[in-house]
Length: 201
Length: 110
Image (cartoon, rainbow over all chains, first blue to last red):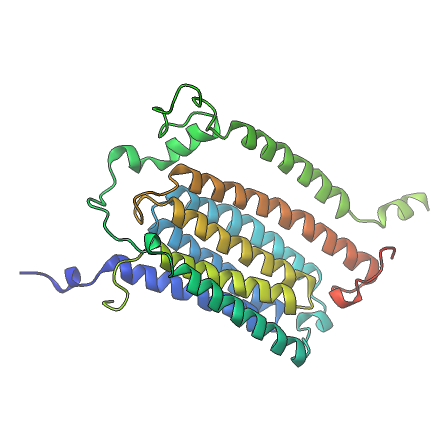
């Protein structure tokens, strides 16, 4: 005897739910005229795309999406919205001609991309065998951390010539220095300009 | 859910395509500089979704493996840095011109 709960394909159900939320709120960002509502829709769209990451088995990327994007970057954007939210900038109107032109171009691009996404048969194969993650696949976080410091636990049996060359230590260091420079530059550019005149007076 | 069948990489690519197109249209049509920034975030997120889908071991047999997730992580980090710098530029423009409308941002020296 099967329960009614077992009859529902939960993976498909959650995929359709998160995909509809993501696309719907992205369209909401596009068609909303109010900048505050756009920021709110963007938060919801990015949070539900984190759900898609979880469904694809990339739980660490999903957690980073929630923490860095939704928790950090979007809070920064909302700060920017609040700092510049005067009445005349809340909803700036776009001319109708630009809407028509960009919707035509965007619709064409979307049709092209969708046709390309469903064209290649290798992207639609479903035979996977046992999809239960093994214990070595389950700890994605440990494997990602090892890869960032230069060890690839999934490519240990590479040829000796390539051993140690497939890790991500160097890009990791470059990204770290890049973030430091970006923070210094952003703090330098966004600082209050009025300070020098008041102290000179 | 019979009409969907099994979730494959193609479905993830379709969601990513929708995110990309809406982001690109946001960049093209919004007049508020922060709206343009939100469009950039949407485009980067669509690309991220494709990376994760191609790297997922649950969707396809010959996947990218860890490389997909790692690329997605790098994209997230670089998007954070990009948002910080672009927001600083937008605030600087707002301080100088008392406006956030990018149609008025047509001179190099304020």
